[in-house]
Image 1 (cartoon, rainbow, N blue to C red):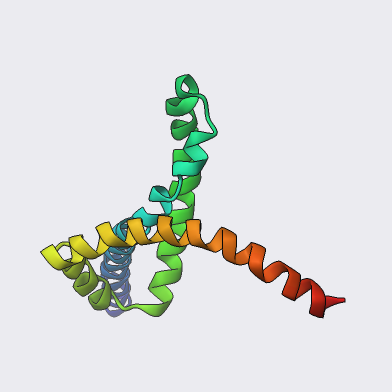
Image 2: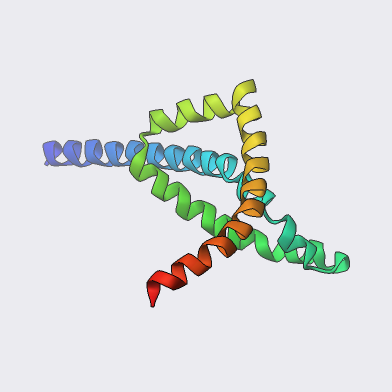
Length: 133
């Protein structure tokens, strides 16, 4: 009986440690996802321009839970590809001067690439239509 109780307590302890590690991993993965997806929000300039100024803050407030849900899903996906140690090292990089510079440039590059993609898609459409018929 004492051995069974001891084994049960050890299993519970290991389970608790595992849960705490998983929670810490998820927190770090979520932080990484938010940092690396700031470019997504930077690309919302055109979207925000469609909303009247007096409604913009309400729109952003309603958008927040949608983005939070997206970030949570992306964090879970990133956990499939990166170990917790990988995520910690990426966070260290993103928090460095060069990492901050890269994040800033990434947001600007995303906006620029979206601007460039529209004319490209217009140019590609006749070629796609030619071969899709």
